[in-house]
Length: 471
Ligand code: ADQ
Image 1 (cartoon, rainbow, N blue to C red):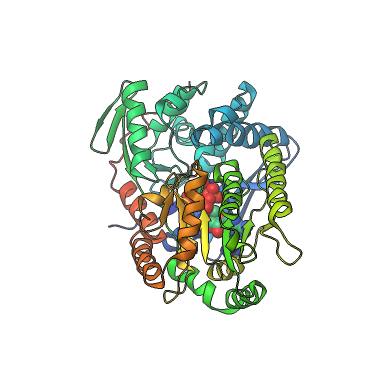
Image 2 (cartoon, rainbow, N blue to C red):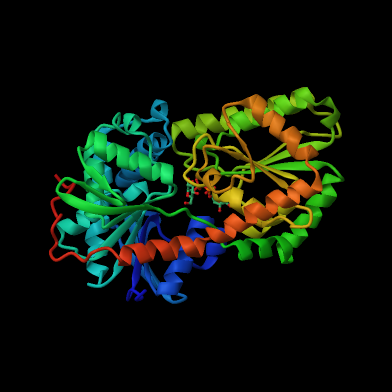
């Protein structure tokens, strides 16, 4: 493959680059790609400024350029809290009941995508390869094309893609889907997501699908599934060196022979936390011999705390955890431990290693990197057991985990029982199979395959498609 001259990544929030190891899986994957291809990362600066005072910041860090834009409070509220997180996020996770649509949020969403396109357009070089990330930026390519951009532009959706019946409940869904046709490549996490997109195009947009090529609105776009992975060696190393190793020993000592079940998630209703806590309660109820022998540690930092549904959800979770501790706890044993903050990645790796079981049970998830990180952090000679929701994209590859339906509390409680009783040989066997798939679909493959597929799309002869999605 011929190397592109420069890769430009665009995401809602760009940076930080330096502390990227502390910033979660996606940032790590992106920074790796940008370093490899010598690139530019563009996105929101994380700052709000008064109207007329928003600025574009640019800095060079470790071989890549970080360009970030401030937003006004009004735009940030409408675009980020309003349309992206209050409307698109729940809808993409099949939660019509939580979807809240306001025209003025859509207006802010368009305005911000327009500002991004205006500022980014000035920074682009003719043969750049542009990789846009996630649902905050669906119409970005359409806005760039309107300004004459002819570069190859790809889009990757980190969330699931919902069934057409759900997507069609979104006012203006046709505008959003139409705007996607200004891209050259659209990537999804899994084949079922890709299939749902194809189905939507056939049924709601009257389009055609041939192989990976989708035609609608007078345009053709290439589509594919590109499951995201992690840097397996790096995460394993985190668990076995320096602070990860220290954390592991500290945790093992504190556990004093008890088994730990771990959950690590952003505090988000899509992660199935309430059902998970309830399933743990059910397990304790059915297994009195486990009392005093097992603890459940849930690490869940607050995210999107400005949004009402998130605030309510946090309180519900705290109540559920307190309820179990009140009901089953003893003066020398607290069954549920709940940490409401983000932890350094090395610490997390050590905690994963010290945990006998990981309970990763989202009700819907694009991929779920935590499941992969837990497996990577295990000692192959004595590995823990992953219990994974069938509705996480990761379940498509990680069939060697104990797969559960997060809506079935009894099945989850039984899986906990099975995991605690699992013989060493079976644990090793499942872990080896999981590691093979982690290596097969690691983060490098994800970014290399996406970039190769985007490079291989046909070049545009004109800025045609300019009108797509901007009506
Ligand atoms: P998220 O919904 O954020 O990502 P996930 O894939 O689990 O979900 O990634 C979270 C990342 O944040 C992981 O690297 C995890 O270690 C880290 N993290 C979580 N809790 C943490 C804590 N308490 N302290 C520190 N770090 C923490 C979205 C989609 C997913 C998709 C990813 C990547 O919703 O489905 O897998 O993007 O595409």
